[in-house]
Length: 57
Image 1: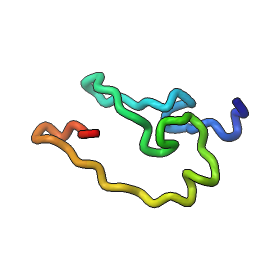
Image 2 (image 1 turned 180 degrees about the vertical axis):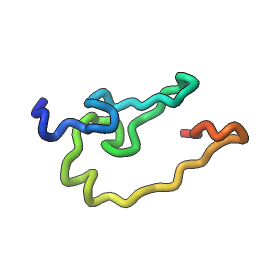
Image 3 (image 1 turned 180 degrees about the horizontal axis):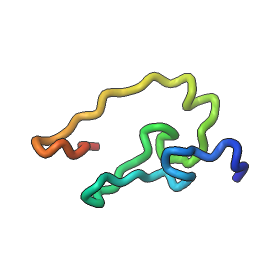
Image 4 (image 1 turned 90 degrees about the vertical axis):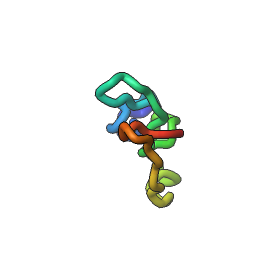
């Protein structure tokens, strides 16, 4: 994996976690660990949360 294209948000793992340890798919690279042209051209999506502000996938 080329370090220049590694997603900096998830450090190439494709997963992020919140402060409670809940893990979810990286919203920057969409879970593949690489930040490329497809990720740059896609629009941001609004994620839904529960009453405790935990992300719902």
